[in-house]
Amino acid sequence: MDSVAQSPKEPSKVGANILNFRRKRHIGYIILTIVLLIVPFIRIGEAKNHIFLLSFDHKVLHLVGIEYSIQEFYVMPFMLMILFVGIFFMTVMAGRFWCGWGCPQTIFRSIYRDIIQTKILKLRKKISNKQEVLKLDTPIKKLKYVLGIIIFACIASIAVADFLFFFVPPEDFFAYMADFDNHHLLLGFWLVVTSFMTFEVCFIAEKFCIYMCPYARVQSVFFDNDTLMSIYDTKRGGLLYNPNGSAIGIAPKKQDPNNECTNCQSCVKVCPTHIDIRKGVQLECIHCLECVDACSEVMAKFNRPTLVNWSSPNAMSSNTKPKLLRTKTIAYMVILTLIFALLIYVGNTHKTMLLNITRTAETYMIRNSGAIDNAYKFVVQNIDKDPHSFAFEIDGDMSDKFDIIFPDYKNQKEFLIKPNETKMLVVLLRAKDSLKDSDYVGQTIPLVVKSYATDNKEVINIKYSTFFMYPSQSIIDKRLKNTKY
Image 1 (tube, rainbow, N blue to C red):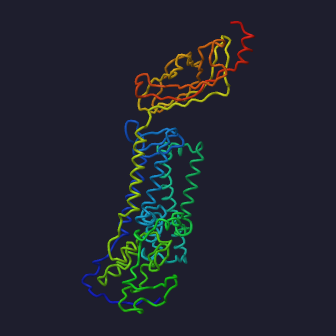
Image 2 (image 1 turned 90 degrees about the horizontal axis):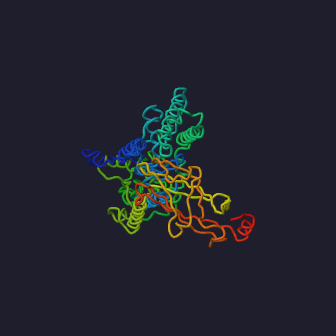
Image 3 (image 1 turned 90 degrees about the vertical axis):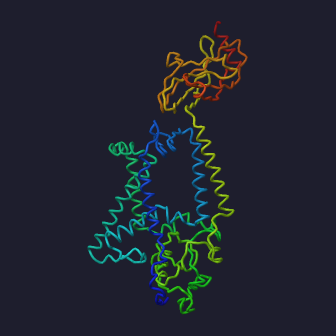
């Protein structure tokens, strides 16, 4: 297309309508980076728990300073629902806003291309031309290019380590790195992800957004005519493409002198995904709004507003403000509020102790005295901030028919468990009835075992359902025949 020049109408007001979404976006990047770097090191409360930590090593989840054991991971589905519904809500309202303003891919591409290659190493002439092809025609340029990759690899290693801090707390991470001979898996994962991230940002670049990112494929399902996006004003600027996507081939000013688009190509040159926004809404657009900034700078010289806006199709056609509050967005807000309320409610039911009971492989044992034993393994975890002594009892109507015996602890009745400590106990449940007097021959008897803190029984307690197996009549007859009572 031929570029058509146009003189400013009112030079005295040059720059009056310049937008600067790039600066706002970069400020957002800086704030997000600082928050993500600081949050893993913040500890809350007396227990010094993290704001967010999903530790597979310790099998715990820290959420706003509250620790949840692996048995309490029922809060995770709510968090995942908030994540996905939140993304859907953001897409319905603001399109691919996440891609341009929060996605790590976009942030790291800006760091590598705009800061390292352009500002520091001067391999590119200016940020506003992202279509420039690097010409590594001298040894100095090649050296700078390699240096740029090395600089970014160092940044990537820090970013990946910070990501791992949400799964391996910093205090453990640095200890593991000091003892890397025994932690090859963590070190290997760190290096592999760092290498992939460096390769992806430095070589795959925006092709990831265009061809590989699944979010780009599903976004069109959520778009409607009120969704915010980068839009070229064809009424003011004029058409450059036919409805079928083919280029018209004639500059807007040559089509009609009243068309305001100068065909300067600024919006095309600045686009990181190499599209022409004047063609209409496209899958590759990540809503970084670079084209809006570029057009606003050009049109400000003519004291005219930008031809590329962050708006919606309905708002552009009616020349009104975008309609953000509508049925879809309100519905998503209601759903998010309900999920968040459920998360708070479930979180407040956080237990201060956990109990898990499993039966051993042996069905039952008949002692010489005639007693019937079933063997179990009790796993008790104290997730309160204070130590407690825990005791056990059979709950309900069966409490007077069974004894709880701890053979490894000389039938000790109470067990001191420190905060966040787990104790495993081998336990025998013994039926008090003798073989010849029992009413439970051949039955599987349901039982409820209750564990509690002896110093705070009403608050710190938990129940677990299990069962007791009694031998059959044939086994009892055989035993009675061979044993004197």
